[in-house]
Length: 331
Image 1 (cartoon, rainbow, N blue to C red):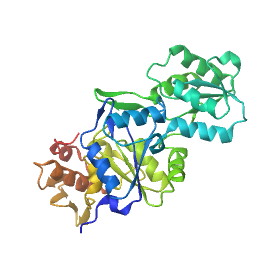
Image 2 (cartoon, one colour; image 1 turned 120 degrees about the vertical axis):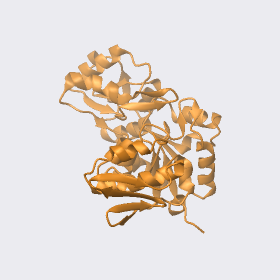
Image 3 (tube, rainbow, N blue to C red; image 1 turned 30 degrees about the vertical axis):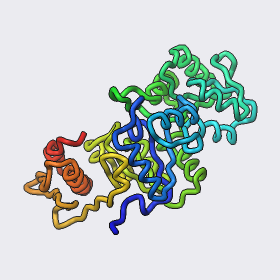
């Protein structure tokens, strides 16, 4: 029997935005993919940097889309922030929260007081993504940090994928405060920073985890830093150009069209002389140019070619632009 990617792992962590859903709709194939991963015997855990909604609310959203999920199947950056701060700050500390009611509720549940005014002299500022953030609240956060409050952020994602396209993420809101208080930077809890995935591993007891995400700079980088395997899927923010631009510590172990790729054998690229081969695809150097050969008429063939091209590109300084243009069925 051919070994599938998931067969080597006991827990599969999934990012949400761009991997499982795009706003109000499920990513095509995600419902079936999660069902089959569970049937393969792996535990499924959703790990999201988005702090706007509670785990219970996100679980209800997942359930409405056809996923069997409860609050215990979710880890949000807001939960991680509240947990870490409860171990870091003095009980009863005053926090200025620039985020949604969910973040306020979580930090209050672990014993902190909250405010929306810098004049209350908060001990710390915690930013979490809010689609309706009042500009005045960002002003208050900036003033509080200037006055000495410790600055935290649930995550620093620059963008967030939706069913209509990319929109600004918490990183943009953090940048507003950062422009005022530079060169100060916040302490960040979410991917790719250590607290998020350390919490996920501890929470699940995972021994052979894999992380599935759509972003190099959060999902894949975070997994690599945590010492776990990773798979980049092409249903969200990042695509073929981002893959080839990834540095040595930021590259995924696997790639796939969507989460169903976990149920497939891994793509393996091997070096043959000046070429890299994956399946029937070959990427080779010829007179300083990268040439792609193989079945480029199908999506699976293009993914094989992309993996061969990525490995060749990472090993040389040849310009991959001409070869990338041939992979016109991949974003």
